[in-house]
Length: 361
Image (cartoon, rainbow, N blue to C red; front, side, top):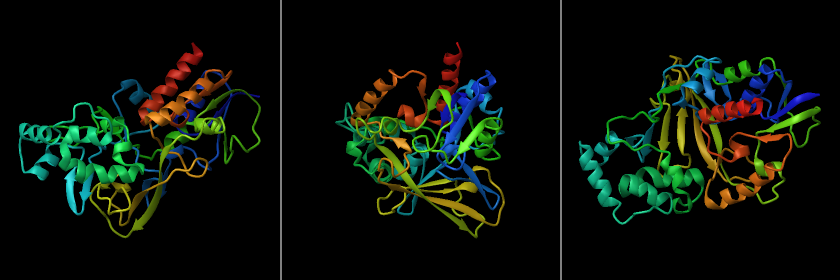
Protein backbone atom coordinates (compact mmCIF):
# COMPACT_ATOMS: atom_id res chain seq x y z
CA UNK A 1 0.00 0.00 0.00
CA UNK A 2 1.45 3.32 -1.11
CA UNK A 3 0.84 6.55 0.78
CA UNK A 4 0.64 8.42 -2.51
CA UNK A 5 -0.07 7.46 -6.09
CA UNK A 6 1.23 10.28 -8.29
CA UNK A 7 -0.09 10.54 -11.83
CA UNK A 8 2.47 12.16 -14.11
CA UNK A 9 6.27 12.13 -14.16
CA UNK A 10 6.66 15.78 -15.14
CA UNK A 11 7.88 18.53 -12.84
CA UNK A 12 4.90 18.68 -10.48
CA UNK A 13 4.62 14.93 -10.02
CA UNK A 14 8.36 14.29 -9.75
CA UNK A 15 8.85 17.09 -7.20
CA UNK A 16 5.96 15.85 -5.07
CA UNK A 17 7.37 12.32 -5.10
CA UNK A 18 10.87 13.47 -4.16
CA UNK A 19 9.76 15.77 -1.35
CA UNK A 20 7.16 13.36 0.07
CA UNK A 21 9.67 10.52 0.22
CA UNK A 22 12.00 12.83 2.14
CA UNK A 23 9.17 13.26 4.66
CA UNK A 24 8.87 9.49 5.05
CA UNK A 25 5.93 8.77 2.74
CA UNK A 26 5.98 5.89 0.27
CA UNK A 27 5.17 7.02 -3.26
CA UNK A 28 4.66 5.48 -6.65
CA UNK A 29 4.74 7.58 -9.83
CA UNK A 30 2.94 6.46 -12.98
CA UNK A 31 2.96 7.97 -16.46
CA UNK A 32 1.16 6.82 -19.59
CA UNK A 33 4.23 7.73 -21.65
CA UNK A 34 7.29 5.50 -21.70
CA UNK A 35 9.66 8.24 -20.51
CA UNK A 36 10.01 10.65 -17.62
CA UNK A 37 10.04 14.45 -17.67
CA UNK A 38 6.76 15.10 -19.48
CA UNK A 39 7.09 17.82 -22.09
CA UNK A 40 10.47 18.84 -20.63
CA UNK A 41 12.00 15.56 -21.80
CA UNK A 42 15.27 15.85 -23.72
CA UNK A 43 17.01 13.18 -25.76
CA UNK A 44 20.52 12.90 -27.21
CA UNK A 45 21.06 13.12 -30.96
CA UNK A 46 24.65 13.25 -32.23
CA UNK A 47 25.79 14.59 -28.86
CA UNK A 48 23.14 17.35 -28.86
CA UNK A 49 20.43 17.66 -26.19
CA UNK A 50 17.19 17.85 -28.18
CA UNK A 51 14.13 19.40 -26.56
CA UNK A 52 11.65 16.84 -27.87
CA UNK A 53 8.49 18.83 -27.12
CA UNK A 54 9.56 22.38 -27.75
CA UNK A 55 12.28 24.58 -26.23
CA UNK A 56 12.42 24.97 -22.47
CA UNK A 57 14.54 27.82 -21.12
CA UNK A 58 14.70 27.84 -17.36
CA UNK A 59 14.22 31.31 -15.90
CA UNK A 60 13.09 32.56 -12.52
CA UNK A 61 13.20 35.57 -10.24
CA UNK A 62 12.95 33.33 -7.18
CA UNK A 63 16.23 32.62 -5.42
CA UNK A 64 14.47 29.83 -3.51
CA UNK A 65 13.44 28.07 -6.73
CA UNK A 66 16.85 28.64 -8.34
CA UNK A 67 18.68 27.16 -5.35
CA UNK A 68 16.27 24.23 -5.20
CA UNK A 69 16.64 23.24 -8.88
CA UNK A 70 20.43 23.58 -8.71
CA UNK A 71 20.48 20.57 -6.39
CA UNK A 72 19.66 18.40 -9.38
CA UNK A 73 21.50 19.99 -12.30
CA UNK A 74 24.22 22.41 -13.29
CA UNK A 75 23.09 25.24 -15.56
CA UNK A 76 24.91 27.19 -18.23
CA UNK A 77 24.36 30.94 -18.70
CA UNK A 78 22.12 30.71 -21.78
CA UNK A 79 19.75 33.64 -22.29
CA UNK A 80 17.05 33.53 -24.92
CA UNK A 81 17.46 36.07 -27.74
CA UNK A 82 15.15 34.88 -30.52
CA UNK A 83 14.70 36.49 -33.91
CA UNK A 84 11.66 36.93 -36.11
CA UNK A 85 11.73 36.11 -39.81
CA UNK A 86 9.10 37.93 -41.86
CA UNK A 87 9.41 36.93 -45.52
CA UNK A 88 13.21 36.95 -45.23
CA UNK A 89 13.46 40.13 -43.16
CA UNK A 90 15.06 39.53 -39.75
CA UNK A 91 13.91 41.40 -36.64
CA UNK A 92 15.03 41.27 -33.02
CA UNK A 93 12.77 39.79 -30.36
CA UNK A 94 11.38 40.58 -27.88
CA UNK A 95 10.22 43.95 -29.15
CA UNK A 96 12.95 46.45 -28.32
CA UNK A 97 14.88 49.34 -29.82
CA UNK A 98 16.69 47.03 -32.26
CA UNK A 99 13.24 46.04 -33.61
CA UNK A 100 11.97 49.61 -33.77
CA UNK A 101 15.18 50.92 -35.34
CA UNK A 102 15.14 48.36 -38.14
CA UNK A 103 11.45 48.80 -38.86
CA UNK A 104 11.16 52.58 -38.65
CA UNK A 105 14.74 53.86 -39.12
CA UNK A 106 14.75 55.58 -35.72
CA UNK A 107 17.30 55.67 -32.89
CA UNK A 108 15.57 56.99 -29.77
CA UNK A 109 12.91 55.63 -27.38
CA UNK A 110 10.98 58.89 -27.70
CA UNK A 111 10.57 58.39 -31.46
CA UNK A 112 9.41 54.80 -30.94
CA UNK A 113 6.87 55.77 -28.28
CA UNK A 114 5.45 58.50 -30.50
CA UNK A 115 4.99 56.15 -33.47
CA UNK A 116 3.28 53.52 -31.30
CA UNK A 117 1.06 56.17 -29.73
CA UNK A 118 -0.05 57.41 -33.15
CA UNK A 119 -0.64 53.90 -34.52
CA UNK A 120 -2.67 52.81 -31.48
CA UNK A 121 -4.75 55.94 -31.27
CA UNK A 122 -8.34 55.14 -30.35
CA UNK A 123 -7.63 51.99 -28.34
CA UNK A 124 -8.22 52.77 -24.67
CA UNK A 125 -9.18 49.47 -23.03
CA UNK A 126 -8.20 46.58 -25.33
CA UNK A 127 -10.92 43.93 -25.71
CA UNK A 128 -8.83 41.20 -27.34
CA UNK A 129 -5.29 40.21 -28.26
CA UNK A 130 -5.28 42.22 -31.49
CA UNK A 131 -6.18 45.46 -29.75
CA UNK A 132 -3.77 44.78 -26.89
CA UNK A 133 -0.91 44.10 -29.31
CA UNK A 134 -1.58 47.27 -31.29
CA UNK A 135 -1.73 49.31 -28.10
CA UNK A 136 1.63 47.83 -27.02
CA UNK A 137 3.61 48.11 -30.29
CA UNK A 138 1.48 49.69 -33.02
CA UNK A 139 -0.04 48.41 -36.26
CA UNK A 140 3.21 47.93 -38.22
CA UNK A 141 4.68 45.44 -35.77
CA UNK A 142 1.33 43.82 -35.18
CA UNK A 143 0.81 43.00 -38.86
CA UNK A 144 4.41 41.95 -39.54
CA UNK A 145 5.47 40.16 -36.37
CA UNK A 146 2.39 39.24 -34.32
CA UNK A 147 -0.79 38.58 -36.29
CA UNK A 148 0.35 35.77 -38.60
CA UNK A 149 2.44 34.01 -35.95
CA UNK A 150 -0.22 34.23 -33.26
CA UNK A 151 -3.08 33.05 -35.44
CA UNK A 152 -1.01 30.11 -36.68
CA UNK A 153 0.01 29.27 -33.14
CA UNK A 154 -3.43 29.37 -31.55
CA UNK A 155 -5.47 28.38 -34.62
CA UNK A 156 -7.79 31.32 -33.94
CA UNK A 157 -8.26 34.91 -35.01
CA UNK A 158 -6.34 37.30 -32.77
CA UNK A 159 -9.67 39.04 -32.21
CA UNK A 160 -10.91 35.89 -30.44
CA UNK A 161 -7.93 35.54 -28.11
CA UNK A 162 -7.62 37.07 -24.61
CA UNK A 163 -5.36 40.06 -23.95
CA UNK A 164 -3.40 38.12 -21.31
CA UNK A 165 -1.55 36.03 -23.92
CA UNK A 166 0.26 38.97 -25.49
CA UNK A 167 0.88 40.63 -22.13
CA UNK A 168 3.40 37.89 -21.40
CA UNK A 169 5.72 39.34 -24.06
CA UNK A 170 8.09 42.10 -22.93
CA UNK A 171 8.28 45.41 -24.79
CA UNK A 172 11.43 47.42 -24.11
CA UNK A 173 12.48 50.89 -25.17
CA UNK A 174 16.14 49.95 -24.74
CA UNK A 175 18.60 47.99 -26.90
CA UNK A 176 18.11 44.89 -24.76
CA UNK A 177 17.03 41.72 -26.55
CA UNK A 178 17.18 39.35 -23.58
CA UNK A 179 13.75 37.73 -23.78
CA UNK A 180 13.22 37.28 -20.04
CA UNK A 181 13.61 39.78 -17.23
CA UNK A 182 14.51 37.16 -14.62
CA UNK A 183 17.96 37.31 -12.98
CA UNK A 184 18.37 33.52 -12.97
CA UNK A 185 18.43 31.88 -16.41
CA UNK A 186 20.03 28.91 -18.10
CA UNK A 187 19.83 25.44 -19.62
CA UNK A 188 20.80 22.23 -17.78
CA UNK A 189 24.22 21.24 -19.10
CA UNK A 190 23.22 17.57 -19.17
CA UNK A 191 19.70 18.13 -20.52
CA UNK A 192 16.40 18.25 -18.67
CA UNK A 193 15.94 14.49 -18.48
CA UNK A 194 18.89 14.28 -16.08
CA UNK A 195 16.94 16.41 -13.58
CA UNK A 196 14.08 13.92 -13.54
CA UNK A 197 16.46 10.99 -13.29
CA UNK A 198 17.86 12.57 -10.13
CA UNK A 199 14.42 13.41 -8.71
CA UNK A 200 12.99 9.93 -9.32
CA UNK A 201 16.13 7.90 -8.65
CA UNK A 202 14.78 6.17 -5.54
CA UNK A 203 11.06 6.39 -6.37
CA UNK A 204 8.92 3.49 -7.52
CA UNK A 205 8.16 4.32 -11.13
CA UNK A 206 5.78 2.71 -13.63
CA UNK A 207 5.95 3.99 -17.18
CA UNK A 208 3.44 3.11 -19.87
CA UNK A 209 0.84 3.05 -17.10
CA UNK A 210 -2.40 4.86 -17.91
CA UNK A 211 -4.34 5.99 -14.83
CA UNK A 212 -7.64 5.43 -16.61
CA UNK A 213 -6.86 2.12 -18.33
CA UNK A 214 -4.09 0.28 -16.47
CA UNK A 215 -4.25 -1.78 -13.31
CA UNK A 216 -3.18 0.49 -10.47
CA UNK A 217 -1.36 -0.28 -7.22
CA UNK A 218 -3.15 0.25 -3.92
CA UNK A 219 -2.82 3.73 -2.50
CA UNK A 220 -4.19 6.00 0.22
CA UNK A 221 -3.85 9.39 -1.48
CA UNK A 222 -3.80 10.55 -5.09
CA UNK A 223 -1.90 13.43 -6.69
CA UNK A 224 -3.18 13.99 -10.22
CA UNK A 225 -1.32 16.17 -12.74
CA UNK A 226 -3.19 15.25 -15.93
CA UNK A 227 -5.98 17.11 -17.75
CA UNK A 228 -8.69 18.08 -15.29
CA UNK A 229 -11.50 17.62 -17.83
CA UNK A 230 -10.35 14.07 -18.56
CA UNK A 231 -10.35 13.21 -14.85
CA UNK A 232 -14.06 14.03 -14.72
CA UNK A 233 -14.75 12.34 -18.06
CA UNK A 234 -15.52 15.67 -19.75
CA UNK A 235 -18.59 16.17 -17.55
CA UNK A 236 -18.80 19.85 -18.49
CA UNK A 237 -17.24 19.45 -21.90
CA UNK A 238 -13.58 19.45 -23.04
CA UNK A 239 -11.24 22.33 -22.33
CA UNK A 240 -9.26 23.83 -25.19
CA UNK A 241 -5.49 23.59 -25.54
CA UNK A 242 -2.90 24.73 -28.01
CA UNK A 243 -1.11 21.69 -29.40
CA UNK A 244 1.78 21.11 -31.75
CA UNK A 245 3.47 18.68 -34.11
CA UNK A 246 7.26 18.55 -34.04
CA UNK A 247 9.28 17.75 -37.13
CA UNK A 248 12.86 16.91 -36.09
CA UNK A 249 15.60 16.98 -38.73
CA UNK A 250 19.28 16.04 -38.54
CA UNK A 251 21.36 18.25 -40.82
CA UNK A 252 24.92 17.81 -42.06
CA UNK A 253 25.88 21.37 -41.14
CA UNK A 254 27.71 22.88 -38.19
CA UNK A 255 25.24 25.72 -37.77
CA UNK A 256 21.93 26.08 -39.61
CA UNK A 257 20.44 29.43 -38.54
CA UNK A 258 22.84 31.01 -36.06
CA UNK A 259 20.32 31.16 -33.21
CA UNK A 260 18.38 28.79 -30.98
CA UNK A 261 14.98 30.07 -32.04
CA UNK A 262 13.71 31.73 -35.20
CA UNK A 263 10.01 32.64 -35.38
CA UNK A 264 8.37 32.71 -38.82
CA UNK A 265 5.72 35.38 -38.54
CA UNK A 266 4.17 35.30 -42.00
CA UNK A 267 1.05 33.19 -42.42
CA UNK A 268 2.54 31.97 -45.71
CA UNK A 269 4.93 29.71 -43.76
CA UNK A 270 3.08 26.71 -42.27
CA UNK A 271 5.27 26.30 -39.17
CA UNK A 272 5.61 28.85 -36.37
CA UNK A 273 9.31 28.51 -35.65
CA UNK A 274 12.50 26.55 -36.15
CA UNK A 275 14.48 25.55 -33.09
CA UNK A 276 18.18 24.71 -33.49
CA UNK A 277 18.99 22.78 -30.35
CA UNK A 278 22.78 22.99 -30.28
CA UNK A 279 22.57 26.72 -29.51
CA UNK A 280 21.07 25.98 -26.10
CA UNK A 281 24.35 24.37 -25.03
CA UNK A 282 26.63 24.99 -27.97
CA UNK A 283 28.92 22.19 -29.07
CA UNK A 284 31.13 22.33 -32.14
CA UNK A 285 29.66 19.28 -33.89
CA UNK A 286 29.60 18.50 -37.61
CA UNK A 287 25.82 17.97 -37.47
CA UNK A 288 22.91 20.01 -36.21
CA UNK A 289 19.39 19.08 -35.12
CA UNK A 290 16.53 21.42 -35.93
CA UNK A 291 12.83 21.18 -35.14
CA UNK A 292 10.01 22.76 -37.12
CA UNK A 293 6.92 23.38 -34.98
CA UNK A 294 3.53 23.02 -36.62
CA UNK A 295 0.30 24.01 -34.86
CA UNK A 296 -2.47 21.43 -35.10
CA UNK A 297 -6.08 21.43 -34.02
CA UNK A 298 -6.60 20.04 -30.54
CA UNK A 299 -8.96 17.11 -30.15
CA UNK A 300 -9.58 16.04 -26.56
CA UNK A 301 -8.33 12.53 -25.90
CA UNK A 302 -6.59 12.26 -29.27
CA UNK A 303 -3.97 15.00 -29.42
CA UNK A 304 -1.53 16.04 -26.71
CA UNK A 305 -2.58 19.07 -24.62
CA UNK A 306 0.19 21.64 -24.28
CA UNK A 307 -0.97 25.17 -23.46
CA UNK A 308 -4.37 26.09 -22.00
CA UNK A 309 -6.48 28.59 -23.92
CA UNK A 310 -7.41 30.80 -20.97
CA UNK A 311 -10.21 32.75 -22.57
CA UNK A 312 -13.51 33.52 -20.83
CA UNK A 313 -15.30 30.48 -22.22
CA UNK A 314 -12.66 27.95 -21.20
CA UNK A 315 -12.01 29.53 -17.83
CA UNK A 316 -15.71 29.31 -17.00
CA UNK A 317 -15.67 25.58 -17.83
CA UNK A 318 -12.55 25.09 -15.73
CA UNK A 319 -14.20 26.77 -12.75
CA UNK A 320 -16.91 24.12 -12.83
CA UNK A 321 -14.27 21.39 -12.71
CA UNK A 322 -12.38 23.21 -9.96
CA UNK A 323 -15.48 23.20 -7.79
CA UNK A 324 -15.64 19.42 -8.17
CA UNK A 325 -12.05 19.10 -6.95
CA UNK A 326 -12.96 20.89 -3.72
CA UNK A 327 -15.32 18.06 -2.83
CA UNK A 328 -12.68 15.35 -3.17
CA UNK A 329 -11.12 13.57 -0.22
CA UNK A 330 -7.48 12.48 -0.38
CA UNK A 331 -7.24 13.60 -4.02
CA UNK A 332 -5.01 16.53 -4.93
CA UNK A 333 -4.66 18.32 -8.26
CA UNK A 334 -1.58 20.21 -9.46
CA UNK A 335 0.40 21.33 -12.48
CA UNK A 336 -0.37 22.98 -15.80
CA UNK A 337 -3.02 20.53 -16.97
CA UNK A 338 -4.77 19.87 -13.68
CA UNK A 339 -4.91 23.56 -12.76
CA UNK A 340 -5.46 24.75 -16.35
CA UNK A 341 -2.77 27.42 -16.00
CA UNK A 342 -0.11 28.65 -18.40
CA UNK A 343 2.68 27.81 -15.93
CA UNK A 344 6.36 28.41 -16.60
CA UNK A 345 8.66 25.77 -15.12
CA UNK A 346 9.65 27.85 -12.10
CA UNK A 347 6.00 28.46 -11.26
CA UNK A 348 5.29 24.72 -11.39
CA UNK A 349 8.21 24.10 -9.03
CA UNK A 350 7.01 26.82 -6.66
CA UNK A 351 3.45 25.45 -6.75
CA UNK A 352 4.61 21.91 -5.98
CA UNK A 353 6.88 23.01 -3.13
CA UNK A 354 4.08 25.11 -1.62
CA UNK A 355 1.73 22.14 -1.86
CA UNK A 356 4.17 19.93 0.07
CA UNK A 357 4.70 22.64 2.69
CA UNK A 358 0.96 23.02 3.23
CA UNK A 359 0.41 19.27 3.27
CA UNK A 360 3.05 18.70 5.93
CA UNK A 361 2.12 21.65 8.15
